[in-house]
Image 1 (cartoon, one colour):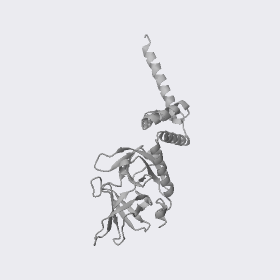
Image 2 (cartoon, helix red, strand yellow):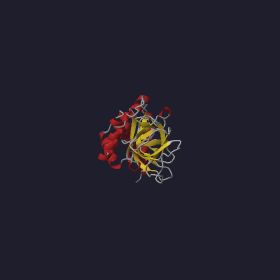
Image 3 (cartoon, rainbow, N blue to C red):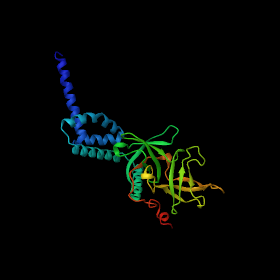
Image 4 (cartoon, rainbow, N blue to C red):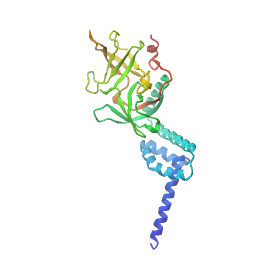
Amino acid sequence: MRDSRRNRLLLSVVLIVALGLVAIDYTNGASPVIRTARNVAGSVFGGAERAVSGVIAPVARLFGSSQGSSPGRTTALERQVASLRAELSAASLDKSQYRQLSQVLRVARAGSYRVVAGTVIGFGQGYQQTVTVDAGSAQGVRPQQTVLTGGGLVGQVISVTAHTCTVLLADDPGSTVGIRMAPSGEIGWVTGQGPAGTGRGLLKLSVLNPAVPLRPGQQLVTAASVNDRPFVPGVPVGVVVTVLSQAGSLTGQALVRPDANFSALDVVGIVVGPPRHNPKYKVLPVAVHTGH
């Protein structure tokens, strides 16, 4: 073509304007077409929505600044985007995940924990027993926060990115969790044993008072850490299955079956807001926390 340079320039301008309009539409969520497309994409591709967000966000910020967006408007848009992401996540849940999410929310209500729900998207391949969850600093997640399932304690957050976090599982050999026994309130701690430890899949309990009688069936909950970091109080930990104490031991010892199934983690809750008051044993079955 005789004027190919001019045509290329016009095409570039059109593409830039189109990309800008898409970016603005993506930010304010006004277009039902875009919203429908994102809902479909979210249910099919799941985590790919965040990748799209990462590509478009810089352009959206550019056009947003040219429109003179106020801090209040920016905050409102961020809340809207967070809500849309929640809708996408909910749309992609299957029946099993929905049931798990309901159980997580039940535990959160019972313990008065404010939680951010996430799904496990990876298991650690190194020496530590860890999982990766698709919730991060953008959702309020910070290091040293408690992670739980509908069954009980999973572990603690040890590192965070914008949209993911790494969780150290309670069965890792380097994990130590302060506990209270229900309903006596006796204190102690459980340590992980890893996949190759004595009593594979079990936690090892040490009770501070060696005179405390230990027996199978006793239940444990987390004791409060200083400033509730890394563990908030009252989260179910597990049940005593084998007593190990020997005469002359400085501490009572036993093996504990964890309430959480570490090998089949899917939907988890990250406690981003601790309870105002210690729930003690309210998250456990009624027969336990009433002392019957």
